[in-house]
Length: 470
Image 1 (spheres, rainbow, N blue to C red):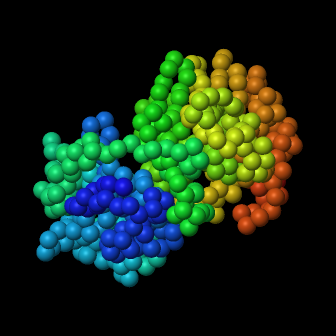
Image 2: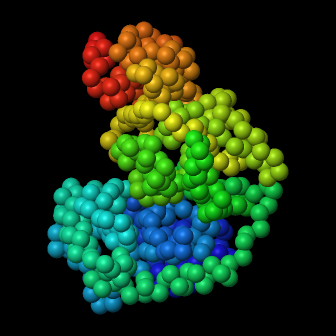
Image 3: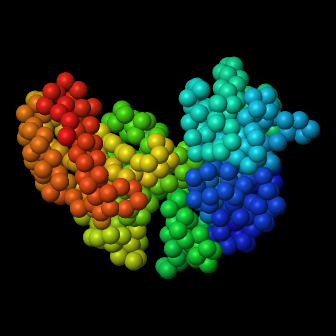
Protein backbone atom coordinates (compact mmCIF):
# COMPACT_ATOMS: atom_id res chain seq x y z
CA UNK A 1 0.00 0.00 0.00
CA UNK A 2 1.08 3.57 -0.72
CA UNK A 3 0.09 5.98 2.06
CA UNK A 4 0.29 9.77 2.09
CA UNK A 5 -1.69 12.90 2.90
CA UNK A 6 -3.68 14.27 -0.03
CA UNK A 7 -4.78 17.77 0.89
CA UNK A 8 -6.52 17.34 4.27
CA UNK A 9 -7.06 13.57 4.00
CA UNK A 10 -4.91 10.51 4.57
CA UNK A 11 -4.92 8.21 1.55
CA UNK A 12 -3.82 4.58 1.26
CA UNK A 13 -3.97 2.94 -2.13
CA UNK A 14 -3.00 -0.29 -3.85
CA UNK A 15 -2.99 1.35 -7.29
CA UNK A 16 0.17 0.67 -9.34
CA UNK A 17 3.11 2.54 -7.86
CA UNK A 18 4.30 3.37 -11.36
CA UNK A 19 1.18 5.25 -12.44
CA UNK A 20 1.53 9.02 -12.55
CA UNK A 21 0.38 11.02 -9.57
CA UNK A 22 -1.61 13.14 -12.04
CA UNK A 23 -3.74 10.20 -13.14
CA UNK A 24 -4.30 9.08 -9.54
CA UNK A 25 -5.40 12.57 -8.52
CA UNK A 26 -7.82 13.02 -11.39
CA UNK A 27 -9.21 9.56 -12.06
CA UNK A 28 -8.99 7.87 -8.68
CA UNK A 29 -9.62 10.85 -6.40
CA UNK A 30 -11.71 12.95 -8.82
CA UNK A 31 -9.69 16.08 -8.06
CA UNK A 32 -9.94 17.56 -11.53
CA UNK A 33 -8.54 21.00 -10.75
CA UNK A 34 -5.12 19.57 -11.58
CA UNK A 35 -5.07 19.74 -15.37
CA UNK A 36 -3.67 17.47 -18.07
CA UNK A 37 -1.69 19.56 -20.52
CA UNK A 38 1.49 18.38 -22.19
CA UNK A 39 2.30 15.29 -20.06
CA UNK A 40 5.95 16.23 -20.52
CA UNK A 41 6.46 18.63 -17.60
CA UNK A 42 6.61 21.68 -19.85
CA UNK A 43 3.32 23.50 -19.23
CA UNK A 44 2.89 23.33 -15.44
CA UNK A 45 -0.89 22.86 -15.60
CA UNK A 46 -0.55 19.74 -13.44
CA UNK A 47 1.56 21.38 -10.71
CA UNK A 48 1.12 20.12 -7.15
CA UNK A 49 3.02 20.75 -3.93
CA UNK A 50 4.89 17.98 -2.16
CA UNK A 51 5.43 18.44 1.56
CA UNK A 52 8.09 16.34 3.25
CA UNK A 53 9.78 16.19 6.65
CA UNK A 54 13.48 16.97 6.19
CA UNK A 55 15.81 17.44 9.15
CA UNK A 56 12.71 17.40 11.35
CA UNK A 57 11.18 20.34 9.46
CA UNK A 58 8.25 20.34 7.02
CA UNK A 59 9.33 21.62 3.61
CA UNK A 60 7.22 22.12 0.47
CA UNK A 61 8.36 21.92 -3.15
CA UNK A 62 6.38 22.23 -6.37
CA UNK A 63 6.32 19.32 -8.83
CA UNK A 64 4.74 18.42 -12.15
CA UNK A 65 2.44 15.52 -11.27
CA UNK A 66 2.47 14.23 -14.87
CA UNK A 67 6.11 13.16 -14.36
CA UNK A 68 5.83 12.03 -10.74
CA UNK A 69 5.30 8.38 -9.89
CA UNK A 70 2.55 7.63 -7.40
CA UNK A 71 5.11 5.67 -5.38
CA UNK A 72 7.16 8.84 -4.88
CA UNK A 73 4.22 10.36 -2.98
CA UNK A 74 4.59 7.86 -0.12
CA UNK A 75 4.92 9.54 3.26
CA UNK A 76 4.44 13.05 1.85
CA UNK A 77 1.79 15.74 1.84
CA UNK A 78 0.46 16.20 -1.69
CA UNK A 79 -1.39 19.46 -2.25
CA UNK A 80 -3.64 20.15 -5.25
CA UNK A 81 -5.55 23.34 -6.05
CA UNK A 82 -8.48 21.93 -4.06
CA UNK A 83 -6.22 21.68 -1.03
CA UNK A 84 -5.51 25.41 -0.87
CA UNK A 85 -9.12 26.55 -1.27
CA UNK A 86 -10.77 28.32 1.65
CA UNK A 87 -14.38 27.67 2.62
CA UNK A 88 -16.74 30.20 1.09
CA UNK A 89 -14.12 32.65 -0.13
CA UNK A 90 -11.09 33.03 -2.38
CA UNK A 91 -7.67 32.75 -0.80
CA UNK A 92 -5.28 35.70 -1.06
CA UNK A 93 -3.53 34.36 -4.19
CA UNK A 94 -6.83 33.70 -5.96
CA UNK A 95 -8.03 37.20 -5.05
CA UNK A 96 -4.85 38.68 -6.52
CA UNK A 97 -5.39 36.79 -9.78
CA UNK A 98 -8.99 37.95 -9.94
CA UNK A 99 -8.14 41.57 -9.12
CA UNK A 100 -5.34 41.76 -11.72
CA UNK A 101 -7.25 39.95 -14.47
CA UNK A 102 -4.58 37.24 -14.43
CA UNK A 103 -6.80 34.50 -15.81
CA UNK A 104 -8.62 34.19 -19.12
CA UNK A 105 -9.46 30.66 -20.28
CA UNK A 106 -8.43 29.44 -16.81
CA UNK A 107 -6.78 26.18 -17.86
CA UNK A 108 -3.34 27.17 -16.57
CA UNK A 109 -4.57 29.08 -13.51
CA UNK A 110 -4.57 26.21 -10.97
CA UNK A 111 -0.93 25.47 -11.74
CA UNK A 112 0.11 29.10 -11.31
CA UNK A 113 -1.77 29.43 -8.02
CA UNK A 114 -0.36 26.19 -6.61
CA UNK A 115 3.18 27.25 -7.58
CA UNK A 116 2.74 30.62 -5.86
CA UNK A 117 1.29 28.84 -2.82
CA UNK A 118 4.55 26.92 -2.65
CA UNK A 119 6.41 30.24 -2.75
CA UNK A 120 4.36 31.34 0.26
CA UNK A 121 5.73 28.43 2.34
CA UNK A 122 9.30 29.66 1.82
CA UNK A 123 11.02 30.30 5.17
CA UNK A 124 13.98 32.12 3.64
CA UNK A 125 13.90 35.81 2.79
CA UNK A 126 11.57 36.37 -0.12
CA UNK A 127 11.58 38.71 -3.11
CA UNK A 128 9.60 39.42 -6.25
CA UNK A 129 12.28 37.58 -8.23
CA UNK A 130 11.74 34.49 -6.06
CA UNK A 131 8.00 34.75 -6.69
CA UNK A 132 8.55 34.85 -10.46
CA UNK A 133 11.02 31.96 -10.23
CA UNK A 134 8.34 29.88 -8.50
CA UNK A 135 6.15 30.04 -11.63
CA UNK A 136 8.91 29.69 -14.23
CA UNK A 137 7.58 26.24 -15.13
CA UNK A 138 4.03 27.45 -15.72
CA UNK A 139 2.91 28.49 -19.20
CA UNK A 140 -0.05 30.75 -20.03
CA UNK A 141 -1.17 31.07 -23.64
CA UNK A 142 -3.71 33.87 -23.04
CA UNK A 143 -2.62 36.71 -20.79
CA UNK A 144 0.80 37.78 -22.01
CA UNK A 145 1.98 37.29 -18.39
CA UNK A 146 1.92 40.95 -17.25
CA UNK A 147 -1.27 40.49 -15.24
CA UNK A 148 0.19 37.31 -13.71
CA UNK A 149 3.37 39.20 -12.83
CA UNK A 150 1.29 41.89 -11.10
CA UNK A 151 -0.57 39.21 -9.14
CA UNK A 152 2.73 37.60 -8.15
CA UNK A 153 4.05 40.98 -6.98
CA UNK A 154 0.93 41.51 -4.89
CA UNK A 155 1.37 38.11 -3.25
CA UNK A 156 5.04 38.74 -2.55
CA UNK A 157 4.33 42.21 -1.13
CA UNK A 158 2.03 40.53 1.37
CA UNK A 159 4.76 38.03 2.30
CA UNK A 160 7.16 40.89 2.99
CA UNK A 161 4.89 41.92 5.89
CA UNK A 162 5.84 38.76 7.79
CA UNK A 163 7.84 39.50 10.93
CA UNK A 164 8.95 36.77 13.28
CA UNK A 165 6.33 34.24 12.23
CA UNK A 166 6.87 30.97 10.46
CA UNK A 167 5.85 30.98 6.83
CA UNK A 168 2.95 28.57 7.40
CA UNK A 169 1.58 30.46 10.40
CA UNK A 170 1.65 33.70 8.44
CA UNK A 171 0.08 32.10 5.36
CA UNK A 172 -2.80 30.71 7.40
CA UNK A 173 -3.30 33.98 9.30
CA UNK A 174 -3.41 35.97 6.04
CA UNK A 175 -5.81 33.52 4.40
CA UNK A 176 -3.24 32.41 1.85
CA UNK A 177 -3.53 28.78 2.97
CA UNK A 178 -6.26 26.94 4.91
CA UNK A 179 -5.78 26.24 8.61
CA UNK A 180 -5.27 22.49 8.29
CA UNK A 181 -1.71 23.17 7.05
CA UNK A 182 -0.74 23.80 10.68
CA UNK A 183 -1.59 20.18 11.53
CA UNK A 184 0.32 18.58 8.66
CA UNK A 185 3.77 18.31 10.24
CA UNK A 186 2.53 16.28 13.21
CA UNK A 187 0.32 14.13 10.98
CA UNK A 188 3.18 13.39 8.57
CA UNK A 189 5.50 12.41 11.40
CA UNK A 190 2.88 10.01 12.74
CA UNK A 191 2.20 8.63 9.26
CA UNK A 192 5.87 8.00 8.55
CA UNK A 193 6.37 6.22 11.87
CA UNK A 194 3.90 3.60 10.70
CA UNK A 195 5.23 3.16 7.17
CA UNK A 196 7.09 -0.04 6.41
CA UNK A 197 10.19 0.02 4.24
CA UNK A 198 9.35 -1.39 0.80
CA UNK A 199 10.78 -4.77 -0.11
CA UNK A 200 13.28 -4.36 -2.96
CA UNK A 201 13.59 -6.99 -5.65
CA UNK A 202 16.67 -7.95 -7.66
CA UNK A 203 14.91 -7.38 -10.97
CA UNK A 204 12.96 -4.27 -10.07
CA UNK A 205 13.41 -1.09 -12.08
CA UNK A 206 15.22 1.61 -10.12
CA UNK A 207 13.50 5.00 -10.20
CA UNK A 208 14.55 8.32 -8.71
CA UNK A 209 12.91 11.50 -10.07
CA UNK A 210 11.69 9.94 -13.31
CA UNK A 211 11.46 13.25 -15.15
CA UNK A 212 12.98 11.81 -18.34
CA UNK A 213 11.62 8.30 -17.98
CA UNK A 214 7.99 9.38 -17.69
CA UNK A 215 8.19 11.46 -20.84
CA UNK A 216 9.27 8.38 -22.79
CA UNK A 217 7.76 5.36 -21.00
CA UNK A 218 4.70 6.50 -19.07
CA UNK A 219 2.46 3.60 -20.08
CA UNK A 220 5.18 0.99 -19.58
CA UNK A 221 5.84 2.22 -16.04
CA UNK A 222 2.34 1.13 -15.01
CA UNK A 223 3.41 -2.49 -15.26
CA UNK A 224 6.89 -2.23 -13.73
CA UNK A 225 8.00 -3.42 -10.32
CA UNK A 226 9.85 -0.39 -9.03
CA UNK A 227 12.37 0.39 -6.32
CA UNK A 228 12.03 4.07 -5.38
CA UNK A 229 15.39 5.72 -4.69
CA UNK A 230 14.49 9.43 -4.70
CA UNK A 231 14.06 9.73 -0.93
CA UNK A 232 16.76 7.35 0.28
CA UNK A 233 18.69 9.48 2.82
CA UNK A 234 22.06 7.92 1.97
CA UNK A 235 21.57 8.80 -1.71
CA UNK A 236 20.34 12.36 -1.07
CA UNK A 237 23.37 13.86 0.68
CA UNK A 238 26.11 16.25 -0.42
CA UNK A 239 29.25 15.66 1.63
CA UNK A 240 32.47 17.67 1.66
CA UNK A 241 35.53 15.68 2.80
CA UNK A 242 38.81 17.58 2.52
CA UNK A 243 39.10 18.54 -1.14
CA UNK A 244 36.52 15.98 -2.33
CA UNK A 245 32.82 16.58 -2.82
CA UNK A 246 30.52 13.55 -2.95
CA UNK A 247 26.90 13.66 -4.09
CA UNK A 248 24.44 10.87 -3.55
CA UNK A 249 22.91 9.70 -6.81
CA UNK A 250 19.44 10.99 -5.86
CA UNK A 251 20.55 14.56 -5.17
CA UNK A 252 18.22 16.79 -7.17
CA UNK A 253 19.13 19.86 -9.16
CA UNK A 254 17.47 21.95 -6.43
CA UNK A 255 19.49 20.18 -3.72
CA UNK A 256 22.64 21.00 -5.65
CA UNK A 257 21.64 24.64 -6.20
CA UNK A 258 20.86 25.14 -2.50
CA UNK A 259 24.00 23.37 -1.26
CA UNK A 260 26.43 25.64 0.63
CA UNK A 261 29.32 23.70 -0.92
CA UNK A 262 28.18 24.39 -4.47
CA UNK A 263 27.30 28.00 -3.70
CA UNK A 264 30.78 28.56 -2.27
CA UNK A 265 32.76 27.01 -5.12
CA UNK A 266 30.44 27.98 -7.99
CA UNK A 267 29.28 31.55 -7.27
CA UNK A 268 27.52 31.78 -10.65
CA UNK A 269 25.47 28.65 -9.98
CA UNK A 270 22.10 30.42 -9.66
CA UNK A 271 22.33 31.73 -13.22
CA UNK A 272 23.43 28.32 -14.50
CA UNK A 273 20.59 26.48 -12.78
CA UNK A 274 17.99 28.80 -14.30
CA UNK A 275 19.04 27.48 -17.72
CA UNK A 276 18.13 23.93 -16.65
CA UNK A 277 14.43 22.99 -17.06
CA UNK A 278 12.07 24.65 -14.52
CA UNK A 279 11.62 24.92 -10.78
CA UNK A 280 9.09 22.05 -10.69
CA UNK A 281 11.34 19.70 -12.64
CA UNK A 282 14.52 20.75 -10.83
CA UNK A 283 12.78 19.77 -7.60
CA UNK A 284 12.49 16.18 -8.90
CA UNK A 285 15.26 15.66 -11.47
CA UNK A 286 18.40 14.00 -10.13
CA UNK A 287 22.05 14.42 -11.06
CA UNK A 288 22.62 10.70 -11.66
CA UNK A 289 19.40 10.46 -13.66
CA UNK A 290 20.75 13.07 -16.04
CA UNK A 291 23.92 11.01 -16.47
CA UNK A 292 22.16 7.68 -17.02
CA UNK A 293 19.66 9.14 -19.47
CA UNK A 294 22.76 9.56 -21.65
CA UNK A 295 21.49 12.48 -23.69
CA UNK A 296 24.29 14.07 -25.74
CA UNK A 297 23.06 17.45 -24.45
CA UNK A 298 22.36 16.68 -20.79
CA UNK A 299 23.07 19.94 -18.95
CA UNK A 300 24.27 18.36 -15.70
CA UNK A 301 26.40 15.87 -17.60
CA UNK A 302 28.20 18.69 -19.38
CA UNK A 303 28.59 20.55 -16.07
CA UNK A 304 30.20 17.59 -14.29
CA UNK A 305 32.28 16.48 -17.29
CA UNK A 306 34.22 19.73 -17.05
CA UNK A 307 34.93 18.87 -13.40
CA UNK A 308 36.22 15.42 -14.45
CA UNK A 309 33.74 13.79 -12.07
CA UNK A 310 33.94 10.13 -11.08
CA UNK A 311 30.95 7.80 -10.70
CA UNK A 312 30.65 5.08 -8.09
CA UNK A 313 28.60 2.16 -9.48
CA UNK A 314 27.12 -0.58 -7.31
CA UNK A 315 25.25 -3.84 -7.78
CA UNK A 316 24.40 -4.11 -4.08
CA UNK A 317 27.45 -6.25 -3.34
CA UNK A 318 30.39 -4.66 -5.09
CA UNK A 319 31.37 -1.15 -6.06
CA UNK A 320 33.53 0.15 -8.86
CA UNK A 321 34.55 3.60 -9.98
CA UNK A 322 34.45 4.95 -13.51
CA UNK A 323 35.27 8.41 -14.84
CA UNK A 324 32.23 10.21 -16.21
CA UNK A 325 34.14 10.95 -19.41
CA UNK A 326 34.59 7.18 -19.94
CA UNK A 327 31.03 6.30 -18.96
CA UNK A 328 29.64 6.84 -22.47
CA UNK A 329 30.54 4.16 -25.02
CA UNK A 330 28.27 5.34 -27.83
CA UNK A 331 24.87 6.88 -28.36
CA UNK A 332 22.78 5.84 -25.32
CA UNK A 333 25.39 3.14 -24.53
CA UNK A 334 26.90 3.15 -21.04
CA UNK A 335 29.71 1.43 -19.18
CA UNK A 336 27.10 0.08 -16.75
CA UNK A 337 25.91 -3.48 -16.27
CA UNK A 338 22.20 -4.21 -16.18
CA UNK A 339 22.29 -4.90 -12.43
CA UNK A 340 24.33 -1.80 -11.56
CA UNK A 341 23.17 1.64 -10.56
CA UNK A 342 24.96 4.91 -9.91
CA UNK A 343 25.45 5.20 -6.15
CA UNK A 344 27.35 8.48 -5.93
CA UNK A 345 29.27 11.13 -7.83
CA UNK A 346 32.64 12.50 -6.73
CA UNK A 347 34.80 15.36 -7.90
CA UNK A 348 37.81 17.21 -6.57
CA UNK A 349 37.23 20.67 -5.16
CA UNK A 350 39.98 23.10 -6.11
CA UNK A 351 42.32 24.20 -3.34
CA UNK A 352 43.71 27.09 -5.38
CA UNK A 353 42.18 29.78 -7.54
CA UNK A 354 39.76 28.29 -10.03
CA UNK A 355 37.35 29.50 -12.68
CA UNK A 356 34.19 27.84 -13.97
CA UNK A 357 31.64 28.75 -16.60
CA UNK A 358 28.67 27.08 -18.30
CA UNK A 359 27.06 28.19 -21.55
CA UNK A 360 23.93 26.97 -23.28
CA UNK A 361 22.09 28.00 -26.44
CA UNK A 362 18.62 26.68 -27.25
CA UNK A 363 15.64 27.66 -29.37
CA UNK A 364 13.80 29.12 -26.35
CA UNK A 365 15.54 31.15 -23.67
CA UNK A 366 14.05 29.06 -20.86
CA UNK A 367 12.69 25.58 -20.28
CA UNK A 368 14.30 24.08 -23.37
CA UNK A 369 16.94 21.51 -24.24
CA UNK A 370 20.20 22.75 -25.67
CA UNK A 371 21.22 23.01 -29.27
CA UNK A 372 24.78 23.20 -27.95
CA UNK A 373 26.03 23.49 -24.37
CA UNK A 374 29.51 23.62 -22.92
CA UNK A 375 31.33 24.01 -19.61
CA UNK A 376 34.89 24.91 -18.68
CA UNK A 377 36.84 24.49 -15.46
CA UNK A 378 40.26 26.04 -15.06
CA UNK A 379 42.58 25.69 -12.09
CA UNK A 380 44.89 28.70 -12.05
CA UNK A 381 48.33 29.30 -10.53
CA UNK A 382 50.57 32.32 -11.09
CA UNK A 383 48.35 33.50 -13.96
CA UNK A 384 48.73 30.18 -15.75
CA UNK A 385 46.21 27.41 -16.37
CA UNK A 386 47.48 24.63 -14.13
CA UNK A 387 44.72 22.22 -15.20
CA UNK A 388 41.82 22.52 -17.64
CA UNK A 389 38.58 20.67 -18.23
CA UNK A 390 36.38 21.50 -21.22
CA UNK A 391 33.16 19.73 -22.21
CA UNK A 392 30.58 20.10 -24.96
CA UNK A 393 27.13 18.74 -25.73
CA UNK A 394 25.15 18.55 -28.96
CA UNK A 395 28.25 18.12 -31.10
CA UNK A 396 28.76 14.33 -30.98
CA UNK A 397 26.73 11.16 -30.30
CA UNK A 398 27.74 11.37 -26.63
CA UNK A 399 28.37 14.14 -24.09
CA UNK A 400 31.95 15.01 -24.94
CA UNK A 401 34.98 15.75 -22.81
CA UNK A 402 37.36 17.67 -25.07
CA UNK A 403 40.51 15.97 -23.84
CA UNK A 404 42.93 17.22 -26.52
CA UNK A 405 41.72 20.78 -26.08
CA UNK A 406 41.94 20.51 -22.30
CA UNK A 407 45.51 19.21 -22.56
CA UNK A 408 46.44 22.00 -24.99
CA UNK A 409 45.18 24.68 -22.59
CA UNK A 410 47.11 23.29 -19.63
CA UNK A 411 50.20 25.32 -18.81
CA UNK A 412 49.27 28.35 -20.92
CA UNK A 413 48.69 31.92 -19.83
CA UNK A 414 45.23 33.06 -20.98
CA UNK A 415 46.75 36.18 -22.52
CA UNK A 416 49.01 34.02 -24.72
CA UNK A 417 46.30 31.75 -26.12
CA UNK A 418 45.95 31.81 -29.91
CA UNK A 419 42.25 31.24 -30.31
CA UNK A 420 42.40 30.23 -33.94
CA UNK A 421 44.67 27.36 -32.94
CA UNK A 422 42.54 26.52 -29.89
CA UNK A 423 39.37 26.35 -31.96
CA UNK A 424 41.01 24.18 -34.61
CA UNK A 425 41.70 21.59 -31.92
CA UNK A 426 38.12 21.89 -30.67
CA UNK A 427 36.78 21.32 -34.18
CA UNK A 428 38.91 18.21 -34.59
CA UNK A 429 37.28 16.64 -31.51
CA UNK A 430 33.62 17.02 -32.49
CA UNK A 431 31.31 15.45 -35.06
CA UNK A 432 27.93 17.22 -35.01
CA UNK A 433 25.04 16.23 -37.24
CA UNK A 434 22.29 18.32 -38.77
CA UNK A 435 18.93 17.96 -37.02
CA UNK A 436 15.96 20.04 -35.86
CA UNK A 437 18.22 22.05 -33.55
CA UNK A 438 20.54 23.22 -36.30
CA UNK A 439 22.88 22.20 -39.06
CA UNK A 440 26.23 20.61 -38.34
CA UNK A 441 27.95 23.77 -39.61
CA UNK A 442 25.85 25.93 -37.28
CA UNK A 443 26.73 23.78 -34.27
CA UNK A 444 30.43 23.95 -35.08
CA UNK A 445 30.26 27.73 -35.27
CA UNK A 446 28.11 27.92 -32.15
CA UNK A 447 30.52 25.88 -30.05
CA UNK A 448 33.44 28.04 -31.19
CA UNK A 449 31.59 31.16 -30.16
CA UNK A 450 30.57 29.67 -26.81
CA UNK A 451 34.19 28.78 -26.06
CA UNK A 452 35.11 32.38 -26.80
CA UNK A 453 32.29 33.34 -24.42
CA UNK A 454 33.90 31.25 -21.67
CA UNK A 455 37.07 33.31 -21.89
CA UNK A 456 35.30 36.66 -22.31
CA UNK A 457 33.39 36.00 -19.08
CA UNK A 458 36.26 34.49 -17.11
CA UNK A 459 38.97 36.88 -18.37
CA UNK A 460 37.16 40.08 -19.42
CA UNK A 461 40.43 42.02 -19.75
CA UNK A 462 41.79 39.79 -22.51
CA UNK A 463 42.15 41.30 -25.96
CA UNK A 464 43.12 38.14 -27.83
CA UNK A 465 39.65 36.62 -27.31
CA UNK A 466 37.63 39.52 -28.68
CA UNK A 467 38.19 38.75 -32.35
CA UNK A 468 34.90 37.57 -33.84
CA UNK A 469 34.83 34.61 -36.19
CA UNK A 470 33.95 35.72 -39.70
